[in-house]
Length: 348
Image (cartoon, rainbow, N blue to C red; front, side, top):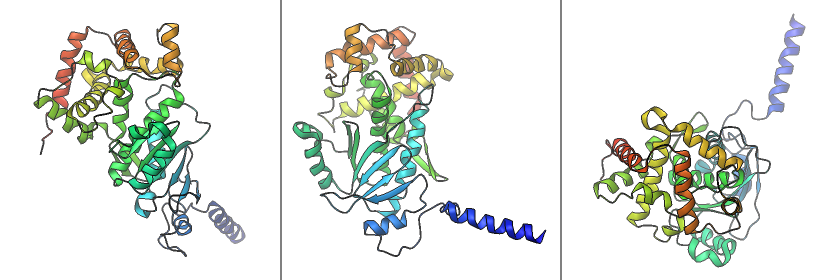
């Protein structure tokens, strides 16, 4: 018995040694090199949840790292240890949440690319190179992130807000890869707002769309000011019609109401329309929307500009096809739902 016990103990120690991080679920408390250096940060991040490995990123902006997780490759010049240690877990938690919006697990064969810069100056310099002739448009963005050409590009605007915009833009990145058809504006943006609010619990993030106080506050103000966009108009709006007015009340109303509309279709009357909503998404993934050949071509070819006129025509058509009910009656139910979810929201 003694021999067996010793053998078992040695085996246990060997397994523990081979596992590396099995006895440690967080970053190191001390490092042999300064954490202000990439090498020191790599050492500090050893055993961080969801992080597979980290390496030095050689770039023209400043010291940087490449963080590799199961589904993401993050190029970052942000070397804030307390924030960076949570980035891998946040992205993987967001990916799991994106998957929950689909009827079946969608396989990711290559990592999603994220650029996360430490400040706006670096972000602007990268954006000028990355977006080319479109740079003037993207430089108007005030919230720290955008999605373009397969990559999310963000800069640090504080932990909560940075994770919020990464969650939002990450949804655009996810569905652009996995969905056969591009989503109408209200649907794409409305879904993206579901990933803006989260809490860190047990080494992963839990998303709480019903606690998105930013969107709820904007919705409350919109209703108080009697500035609500009619449902019929909301369905036809295109992102290009509002993106130039980042701080306008109309933009805030659009995003708040798109957020409320997605929640309405999922939640109202104990999920009365949830199955219809899921069918709309499932057919977007599979490429089976009831569209003409020309409409299907525009919906599926992301190299073709997503025009205002196309969105104005196809978006209401799809909504009427999948969501049961006359638009006037739906407007009443939707307005009631909006008032309900902001009832306890108090504006400062």
